[in-house]
Image 1 (cartoon, rainbow, N blue to C red):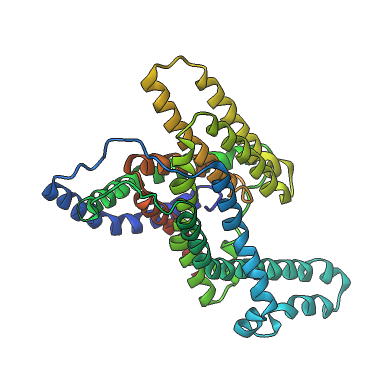
Image 2 (tube, rainbow, N blue to C red; image 1 turned 90 degrees about the vertical axis):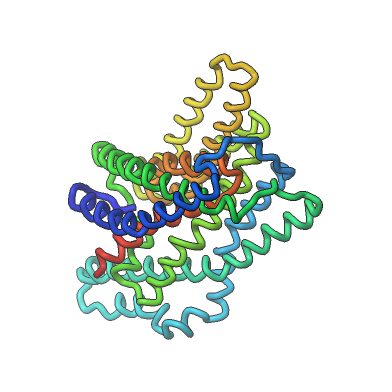
Amino acid sequence: MPSDTWPEFLKLLTCGGYVAAAVLPLIVVSVAQCRKLREPLVPRVRPWPVPWSGLDVSLLIAVVVMMPPVVGEMLGQASFFEKIYGQDFTTTPLTTLRESSSASVAGGAAANEVHQQLALRLTVKGLWAGLFAFPFQVGVIILLRTALYPTWRSLPSRPSRTLPARIALASFAWVLLTPAVFLVHFVANALSLELGSSPDDHPLTRIATGGWRLDRVLFVLQACVTAPLMEEWICRGILLPWTTRQSHRTWTVLIAAIAIAGLVGSTAENAVNRFGSAVFLTLILAAWGLLAQLPRGPRGQVRRRRWGGVVASAAIFAALHSSVWPSPVPLFVFALGLGWLALATRGILASVVVHGLFNLISVLYVLGAAG
């Protein structure tokens, strides 16, 4: 998400208006279809039984997360990027630095240009790696599920009846969640500035200013299609229902999220950006610990397990985005809403739609800033 103050807020508001204009007819049609089918818009939250173990979840997340870097390395070894962008894709930044006539220029403007070019190319490589890795990630999930639990079947559903309700619910959730998340984002940015830390720019914003048109197409595909699908499948489709089965799993996942946040954010240049995500998630862990001390009856225990799964999956989601501070703070709030959607509908369709629409605002903002 973009950072900074009032002008950025107005640009985001404009981009959000464009998306809302497209969503409004979808809401009208979906709600009308729900009434026709007499399908409730908000379903009753029910148990979401899944058979997989913690080892299965850990193995799957590790494989899915590590696959894009491995695929990116394979593409590099096959000279894929040189074939697409030309031989100067890897040589131009270094040549620019060597050919600088002034040492002071080489140490200043030229060196900064080299840094920007290398950063852009790393981002481009990441986009291609994510695109090629996506079908393999999907295949691994399906393969493990089929191999480990061949007799397990998800809860029965009636897609022809429930689809309009899911789309309508997702649209309403997007309308409610988006302003709240962006508000938290701007507040977190302001607090970071007060602490003497400039918010990080997302690496994908480099595509808007320095990338090719093909790179922008990859950017849109990743932000609005592959990332929402894969992140929701992992965080809400696999991790969330597993966590809700037993209370202690919430603690395990929260502690793992803190460790992931510390690892992902370790490359930041200043202390606030480096440790901010881990500290934030530690506060979430402490807050959940205090809530867990409140007395609850049998129904309260069930609700606490469910919300524990929502909080834990949101923490993992935030931790995976810890490389860009303070994004984990608003994204945690966003993921709470996505978790409730997944839990209420016992599926990820609604959360994927909300996630994709939310990212579309940032895509329009970034591409609009470039244009």
